[in-house]
Image (tube, rainbow, N blue to C red):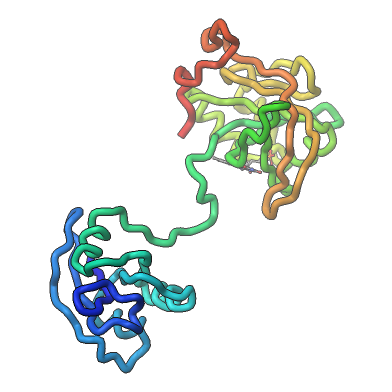
Amino acid sequence: MTFAVAAKGSKTAKSFDDCDAVIIYEKKGEKAFMLRAAENTRSKPLAEFLKGLGVECAICRRMSEEEKASLRSVGIEAVTGFDGEAEEAAGRFAAGPVKKEANKKSCLNPMPRVLVSCRGANGEENALAVGYCGNCSYDPPMLMVGIVPSRYSYQMIKESGCFVVNIADEEYKDTFDYLGSRSKRDEDKLTAMNVRLADGKVVNAPILSDCPVNIECSVVDSIVTGSHEMFVGKVEYVHADASIVGCDGNIDFSSVSFIK
Ligand SMILES: Cc1cc2nc3c(=O)[nH]c(=O)nc-3n(C[C@H](O)[C@H](O)[C@H](O)COP(=O)(O)O)c2cc1C
């Protein structure tokens, strides 16, 4: 990748407005190789000027957010906070990781992949795949699951005020995919996949017996965050396969092959 350092004399300039030359380097591996220097005689906006020099990254000490956005709009990433000798700044930049703005949607990854099971007011049972899920308190133990209101399960959880988070392992991948791509609105998914169920010990929802860990929760609060409603669940009971529970009661998660 090719990048430009704003230089004043031999030093890194405060900004591209303040520089007397733009030194262009090529990053190969973790090293910078100088290609050429272009005098700062620009009559055009910075984005256009740097685009014309064919650079993908612009290095200087400071830059306004507006200027960074205008560079980004032409595919150039601005990297600030460099000072000292321009040559050394280029070397430091090349040695470090190159960052680029990425999409915001579902950007926290990997997501857990769990199956949330529930029972509606009329007694019908269901489960769906959930990735928006996490611990949210250890005292008292709580976790939260994010459910999109259009899911059939959403109304069931609203009605019953409880759910079970089932941690599925790789062997359950086909069932996980099925429960995450079909709706109870159209078919009885649990019967179609021969999902084995057992009653929860504390809450009025089924546990999925073939998942190694099942966490019974009662809803204590919920917040609509946008696309999802986050149900905060107080952990009422944790079932785990005996083979993965240590003498101290902790689950040995290293022996669970999580679905990726
Ligand atoms: C990997 C994966 C993660 C998912 N995460 C969520 C989630 O966090 N929240 C949600 O509401 N739906 C999520 N879904 C989609 C539901 O599982 C899916 O729409 C399901 O068919 C809903 O079933 P239902 O209508 O019977 O409740 C996910 C699906 C997959 C495959």
